[in-house]
Length: 164
Image (cartoon, rainbow, N blue to C red; front, side):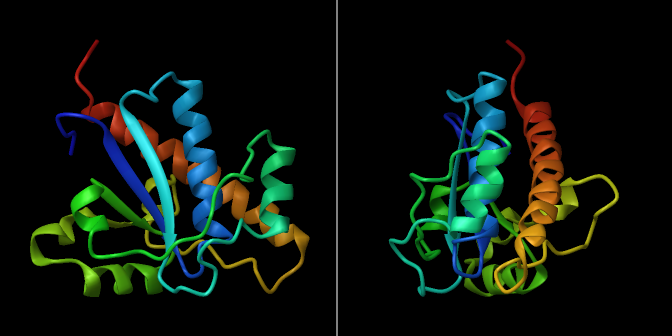
């Protein structure tokens, strides 16, 4: 998985305003905490174009900020075919996003598409639920899942990095 330069990860959800920008922010914070910014990059996108250019949902931002993660600079964008050449991993927040990415991926890039919670212990094959239409507690629950998945993903990536 490790490329000559940085490992690049793209988190993907529906509109890129709740789950995927939260995963991007949490993952970036973990990467920074472990001083791996020179080796790993993260971004996020949505399968749809409804929120292109918009910041993450205020409830996502509020829940993340309570845990020290600032999402305010992230802006929504839609996933594109070019992303399969740019990123080493395209990580779907649920199985509907996984299917959408698999349909969009060129044959040589299908191996790059993964399900997010497959990185979280005991969560293989599960979806990160969309908190958009629920109450505030849904955002905290999603954040718990995202923190677990990001920790597992970072551990897997670190295992592929050359020793210092």
